[in-house]
Amino acid sequence: CFSSNPFPDGRLVALNTMSKADHSRVLRYVHKHYTKDALEELKGDIQEVIEKCTSDLASGKVDGVKWAQRIHMSGTLARLGVKTSWEKVDEIVALNDAMVALVAPLGGVGLPNERLPWTWSFQVALGLIRS
Image 1 (spheres, rainbow, N blue to C red):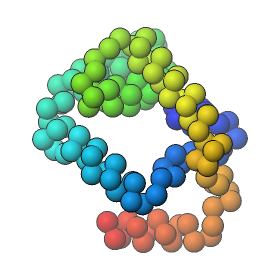
Image 2 (image 1 turned 135 degrees about the vertical axis):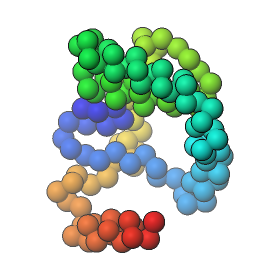
Image 3 (image 1 turned 45 degrees about the horizontal axis):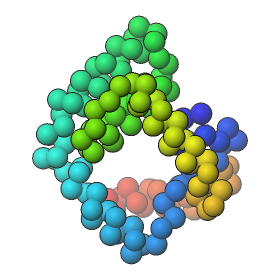
């Protein structure tokens, strides 16, 4: 079970249940943290995290899931200016998973893969073409 999807039955987690207006407002705020310049400032920190995570993976200290969780959460924390130990990163990942498990039943869980509408593939292809 991957971080942010603690459900073993294949449900898709989609926590973005906010209105389009609220989503647009939040997106305007967080977008500045994902620009090329913002990421360039974090390049050294993120590279250090990836190297340490990969070293831990290669030595067998962690598995692929823990590796991915740590890289993802450390990147998010770096954008917030937080550097911390792996123990704290793991604790934050566990907290994130617990929050997803709490919030998802309130409206954040999508249809399982096998029950997606037949138009899903077409919609994905159309979205790729548009982008």
